[in-house]
Length: 172
Image (tube, rainbow, N blue to C red):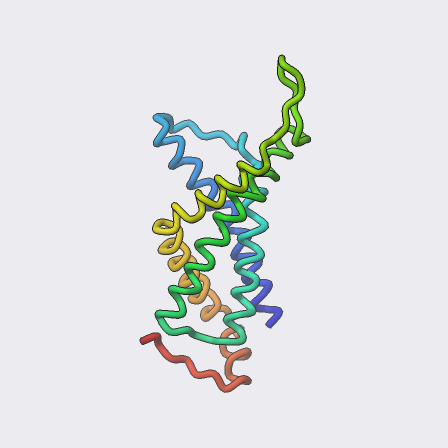
């Protein structure tokens, strides 16, 4: 079980660097520029926690359950596709605000202003639900990729599941 969890953590950490990088390139292309800088490093920090946490939990889940049916895999992908953008859009956005300004209060010409935490939670939640048609298929792809990686690791797939009597069945 620990091997699955550690592999999931490393996979999540790798994804937390690759996907924000691709997102930043895509967003800059939509904005009309192909120039890219690593000035938004807070996005990598904000994405690392949910990705590592999610894929570590998925690693232990796959150790216990084995291969899932197609319906259950879509349901699992929907949970993953909702949790990661929800975390990044709410807590991750606040974390990024704190990294950029070192405080939730900042000074302007009219005095001190504060970060509107309530609006960040409302809009981050809206953002997560509106993007479900995009994030669920992407999460399905990532969960399938993670499952394939678990099967290819020497001794990882066979050791944990054979002891429990779980057979390797293809999804229906």
